[in-house]
Every structure is written in C-alpha cells, then in structure tokens.
Length: 382
Image 1 (cartoon, rainbow, N blue to C red):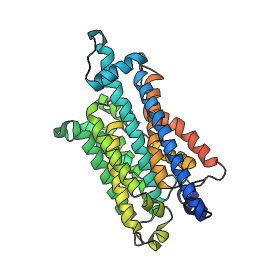
Image 2: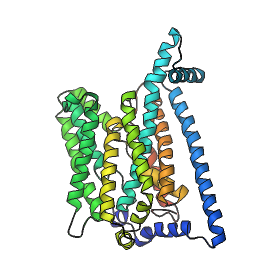
Image 3: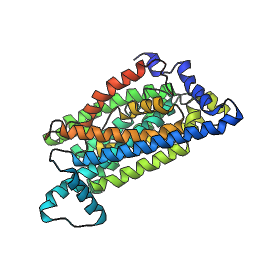
Image 4: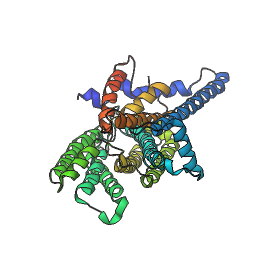
C-alpha cells in the first residue's frame, strides 16, 4: 500500500469542502429554498424506495432457503406469529422454520448490514481515510479475539448467553484503547498515525486469534471459531436480536445528531479548530461509539468484511458527501446488501453454508476497484 492509498491528497481532502459548497451555496436567494426543497424531496423519495426494497428483500429472504416454503404459507405463518393466531398441527414444522429460524436470522442480517455501514461511515470520517473500516483500525479484530476466547475456552461462562457479547465488547474496547494510546504522539492524535497503528495492531490481534485456534482444546471448537471468524448468522436467535438492533439504532441516531461535526471533521483538524470544534475530543467519542457497535455486531455475526468499506463509498456516489444524507441512506443499503448475501450463503451450496465474509469479499473487491477507477471519484464525493 502506497502513501497515497492511506493519506488523502490535497484534492481528496478538499472534496468534501467543494461538495459542501455546492450543497450549501445557492446561486441566488430566490433559488435557495426551492433547491433545498428538491434535495429533501429527493432524499425522502430515495429513503422510501429503499424501505420498500428492504421489506421485499426481507420477505424473500424469509421465504427462500434449503427447505422450500411457499410464499403464501410464509405470509400466513408470519401473520399468525405477529397477531397471535393459530396454525394447524400439520403446519408446525413450516411455522418453526419460518418464525424461529429464518425470521430472526434475516432480521439480524439487516441489523448487522446497517450497523457495519454506519460504522464504516463514522470511521472514514474520523480518520479522513477512504480505506478505513473496523478491520483496518483493529477494532473488529479485537472483538474477534474476545469472542474466540469464549468459543474455545469458555471464558465468562457464568454470564450465560451474554458471554459472547461481553467478551466481544471488551475485546473491541480494549483494541480501541490500545490503538488510541499507541497512536498518540507529541503532536496529538493524527488520522495517519491512527490508521497505521490500527493496521499494525490488527495483525497482532490476528496472530492472537491464530494462537487461540491452535490451542483450542477441542477440534470442534477450532472449526467453529474458523467458520465464525469469516462471518456467519447460523446461530441467530430472537434473544440476540434486541441488543444488536438497539445498539445500531442508537448509534445511527447519535451519528445523525452529530452529522455536522462529521462534515467539519472531514475537512481537517485545522479547519475544525478554526470553526471552534475540538477535533481530538470528537474523534475520541466517535472511536468509543464505533468500538461499542463493532463489539456488539461481531458477537452476533462474526467478522464480516468489506461492508463497512464499500457501502459508504457507494452511498457517497449516490447522494454526495453530506453526512446527514450519507448516514440516512447507508444503513438501508447495507441492510439490503447483507440480507441478500446471507440468502446466497445458505442457498448456493445447500445444505452446506458459505461464510458471509467469503461472499462479501467476492462482491466487495471488484466493486471497490470499479469505484476507485471511476473518473473523478474522490473521497467524500464525486
């Protein structure tokens, strides 16, 4: 990776400024209100369209699978479960497949996809680097170390079903603290030092995960850890859904509330200081928030790569650099994307299941290369 890959050029860094100028500087007073109104209507139309697509994708994901269930039966089972209705004894097997197995899994796929996309947007703005995501900064690797220790050695067994979430969260927070402390220098916390330190520590955490797999007392545990580290929703249950969903919704709301701070942060620390914003303090809060969300998501899905890297770029191409618009659209596109990825993972080679990370990488790598090769594409906008 060359320096130009990890540190945006002056043109790249100024692109959000140019985009913001285009967004906020109307040509005349009588055009400002209509222009803003058109942008809001366009955003609302896009959101509503994506919500419809997400609803259809969710229904398709619940209907299709290794065990065929007709669409009318799927709708009937869902209606019975939601309204408290009854079903015939002959339908008990189909009902169990739809409501107890597929529905929580598909909903969790949507939650994880939305959460990873939002985290990707926040991290890229935090470090002003187009290649940043939870994996590159070591946060996801730290969470994976904690969760792998639970799977292999039974740590925190006294916490029951919350052992995995607790270990992943502690791992993510520990990784964030290490990256933050190691990246601090006399000149403060710079985005470049943050990225380079995160990359270095990510390799260290991956070594720890390899050691955990090597010393796992049972071969089944090692196999489970290896499959889980590549991403899987095979263990999705209703009990694991509320915490992940609440975390993603809360984080998205907080980031939307602070979207203007993200816009300013993307312009650089000097510009932020000139506008009266403490970039270091904002960066600390964002780093803590992304660590918490990443830990919760890794606990329920494993390490799913490329979602937090590719989706933010795709959304910026669609709606520009304004973080309020990006954070509104990114979770919807991320949710749709991972719902279809999960469907492919459990149907392409049924009854065997592909890890999510395999499919996201196969899709994400060429898409990301195409995005980078687009004429005029810059970090933060067109």
